Length: 264
Ligand code: PEP
Ligand code: MN
Picture 1 (cartoon, rainbow, N blue to C red):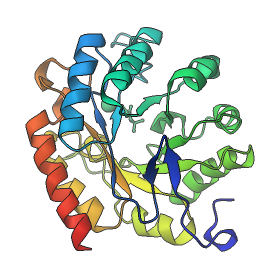
Picture 2 (cartoon, rainbow, N blue to C red; picture 1 turned 135 degrees about the horizontal axis):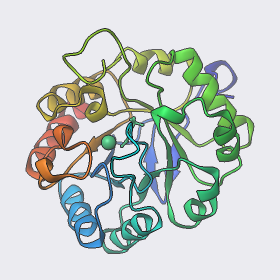
Picture 3 (cartoon, helix red, strand yellow; picture 1 turned 180 degrees about the vertical axis):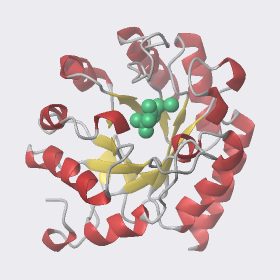
Picture 4 (cartoon, rainbow, N blue to C red; picture 1 turned 90 degrees about the horizontal axis):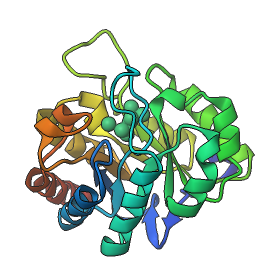
């Protein structure tokens, strides 16, 4: 059960020795929105590792609003990430959109991301509840914290207790940012559940200019980690370029976040 009442201690999820939650150092999951081929993935993995990331994130199956937008490299993209893991040692995080890909994710991926658009895909959540890999469950575009916790419960009820939550902004009337980052979700989740929670300032704001301030605020609020999109050439990124940090800026933001984490 996700409820703190049944489990007073913080859950710490261990991914190949990298811990997320509790008193562990902040977990930093970074990389491009979409995987863009082997050479690029290796380059990005090295860059985010040098900048302080402890996970490589990248999408091979992309939940795009338009069916005519790039849909992801699929298996080829997953294998590009595996190659990058071999070289850098960084565990890999990627989004699962369909049950048919579960065997592939069991074999290759270290953390299974369930995206905002599938937060209430209960059939998928049940299937992921039977998986043997930790799950990063992103908050739905227009879901309450209570609904989000129930989705975590679907995964845990199946036997998979290694759930990490990710606040990635919710849809409000405000259009100045892509979504509205609900930072109060961090203390609320910590009060109601024992699960780790990380924050994704990239999808929350949609604008690279706001990543630093929101990442710092997330760490100050007690988040267990961050998921940040990074690209060497954002204008040419295959998706979400507007919200990608360049590697140098990313390194600078993470160094500042680690100072905040040490200070609180
Ligand atoms: C992503 O992480 O690239 C993504 C699609 O995120 P979200 O599901 O939060 O929109
Ligand atoms: Mn993205």
